[in-house]
Image (cartoon, rainbow, N blue to C red):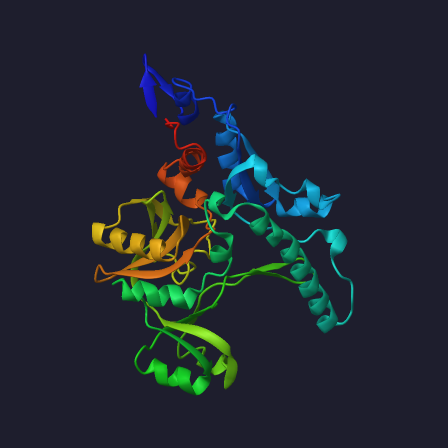
Length: 347
């Protein structure tokens, strides 16, 4: 907050002290996102509106309203592209209705592939030099490769293995009595026929639930469970880290995964500063992966050692921005403007 003449001014009103007008820029910022469940993009757009910046938001859902390909964003009008997300969910009108589960899955997979083919045309229609972040890299980030690279750069990681049978799992438990299993790719939300939703989260494997595991199973990523003091979510932007400590270990519901949110007793969260050596290694990791932004998950264990867990290139940074007063949405808007017009200084 800023003070002038004894009055408190918000972050928005502070800009009015020395406004910059960008309506004269010849090119505009193109934001590729989705229509629903994307509050972070909504807030960045609010800041761009406030700065009178030229931009266009094109959501994946807009592709279902196209009259022809000429209505896609035009490369000649675009100076910078920020790829955020594709789509929240397929429109209900195009949902398949079939009693056969196999046919239902196959047709849905076909429709998704059809949509992806049309959406990916945008990746080729806009000059590659104009992309703030690379959508191909972000959509195909390999969690195992990222862990291996982080380890090579000197970051501690939990012992990680991919297993397919119970025999190997029991053998691994001799070295690591408590293990966790998590997806090799992204976590998803499942929904049954009654509309009930289920979250895919990190699951603990111990002696009590070992009997529930079949002798042979789909290739699964298994890690040692690191006894944590706290979890850290850090958002990387413009070569800076904005971090938040999450005290999730005191709640049995969030001990294994803070994303298993307890709305009745939410975890305490506070701003956090990463040690210089950890920040330096993380920056090298982001640069090696050619990522301009991303949400990074870390654990501080009981011996005060930092463990790297994973990177989500499209992580919702609002969960770090609001509790810690980082105003990351404003920083993202001004960063995009800097990239669009390097000759103009952003307040």
